Length: 429
Image (cartoon, rainbow, N blue to C red):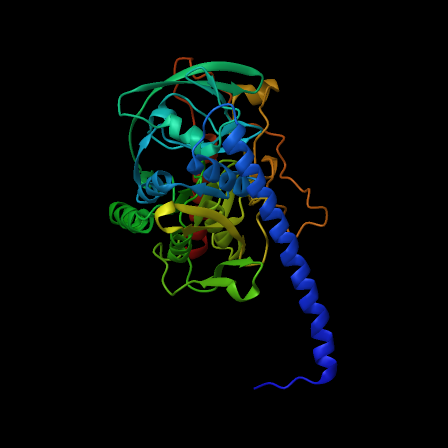
């Protein structure tokens, strides 16, 4: 048993008083909540159930913290569990809230929203003619989901123009990894980080290695418009290309809960050159992978500044009441750099070449730092640093006839890898 001297007892007495004062203030605020709850319950113009009121209060408490914390009722919790497994129903867009509107972070490849021409940065203002302002993100997502083959009309604001897009809902099956060969280069695209990602990556790389054999010059890893996903999958994908070293660290308020993830021996590409493609739609887990490969000088990062979502959300189940998704930590690249609200800066900045850019009609890119209530970057002296957003993303009219176009960023990545292969061959010979 520890024994305290008289001086220590006197010092602690003040601390106890302060704690009691804080506790008293907490009780006062809870009493305020109870008073408001009872007044709404009894006097609101329409009858509202206790469950609706309590859930609305919890949602408000969490969504006021930052754009990514949220309350998940039982249904939404089940939907989220299905989504992380890589299969769910809906339109196929990753969304957040901004200024009361639903903002598209990125459309998912080969989904109804992607085929309809939805773009990263689009603002959805109406759903079937009903204004989205006043809805929470969960409520808006719920309205966008529905029976397969049913239609929904989205009113979209892009730059200064608004237009309607009618999309037919479908079952969204996320094939997390796609691959092909581009001449003597292996191309691997990761569209999101689900439970299938690491397995899909290993299969894709092995298939390319078998197909090209000794002709293989390197790999392009395409993370553009990848909104992120599971942290453990981002760690496994980073580990697949690295032999050793730290991959990412996560830190929150409690220092003891900090985590550091390290690579294990083995590189599935056998040390071949890698170019990673990113843009303003690359977020979260995508940025973890790009940051790890960049800091270890394992890959050249090419494209545009990434989204800048450097926070970790923990799903905390609440038994039969659902769960909360709470921002608990920030993550840092191996060099200790915080990504929150700043993103990954590419080694080689390359915008997608378009007629709109030449005409000076480019649209401003959207990033995590632009979201209302976004967490600050704790390493910034002003906490107001934002990525350079002078160049735009695609401004194509979704109603226009689709035209085949050259992927300029991919073309530059292929040129770079072929140039490196040529240089290496000349050095050997």
